[in-house]
Length: 285
Length: 317
Image (cartoon, rainbow over all chains, first blue to last red):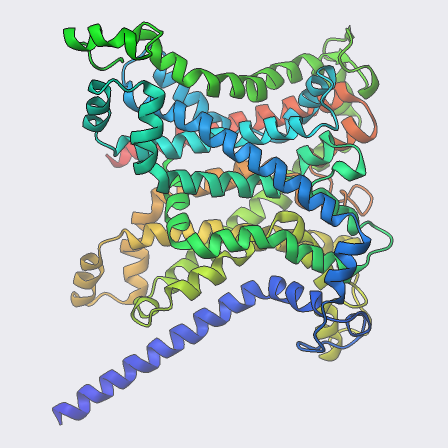
């Protein structure tokens, strides 16, 4: 008797578990569908895309990828984006690590609280209102249509969150380590590079990925500050492919897949860590 | 060199590269960041205020322009379309999507927090799938949805046609009855994962014993979630609501790429209106005035929200 009851209960639990998993994964697959659909279309030959009936799987071809990279300026957009995002990421990490060290190791300097508050407030700032004045400022400096303007913008855009996240990391590193290095005669910059960086690198990785991805996704500044076609970044170039009148959807879908690859790869490899860091960082703000 | 104020430290300080008096070192460290932020945020924000009081077109930016007092604000406020753009921004783009994101986000987070996903080692799969919209750049999200909603070849219309629910494809993005639903769908889809992963992290920090003991006391799953879990999530929900509201209120990219504010001006939001006035109509002064109004609205909202929160916090304490 007892035994049948407990097997009943176990079976009941298994059924409940199974239902939860099937339902959960089903919802998530539905959520992911728009992107999965983009991927499927990008491998589909022209004549099978523009049909009136819905089919999930068809012939697979790489034609769209060849067409995109050979006959369109997309390759140039990719190169622009990779260069601009990499440089601005490195700049953001360098500046934010030094600043976070300053905030973390000096608790009482005058203005610390106010400066940190201002850094946090910039997170809530409407970027869109900055675009006109920045356009004017870069115009005066002769930097319109020059990638430097985007590098500066993306570095600045990523600094507040980077400083905040790294500050949290550095606060957990014991001060004794710096002081030992200081006794050995290391300068502050040497301490940051040789003592702090090797310990804080998980935080630095999160900051780097976040900075790269938000620069990679950015649209408004790239749209406004880069005026010639060959200097466009990926998002603006891609948006140009789906203009209002003629749209080659197969190429748009292919370009979409390639545009998503860097962020997809970075997040799939580092997902657990990134998710917990970003969630914690956002809530702490 | 700062921390070591002992005699030995000071005597060593000089030769090891401390060029600054120790009291100035913190400022030297934070200076580069502050300078970049001042150039990018503070300078332009003040400059934008100045522009909003000048008669200036895109072509005479950077020259000295005529000061016109509140003329730009008057033009913007009486020129028509601003009230509609404000309503679109506050309600159609922000309120609806924030509420739906919080509801879906909470539901999904509670569902995915079920311990069976951990026991069956499905954490990796769950996280990967949740993150897919999040890793999709907004431009790609709009492209994907425009294609899904295409009147002739889009999957949504194909599905509705094959089910016999409609007789010809619906042009979702050019019809006033459907366009906001379509834009909101794109926005919610792309921005939902942030809410889910934040709530999921908060749920995982709730001690299991709390739920277990409630269960032993005979509480139902529904009671456990409304009486124990929700109150504990309140602070996180409050912050996520604030952040997503501010980010969405200022958002430009979804409406711009999905509809350009159309059909007509039907989906114009403040951000796209500001951009259009400045960079399409070249009336930079008026565009700047819209920007100033947007900042004031968000400023009042954020402070009001935080004031209410802190008062509630005090009452609770």
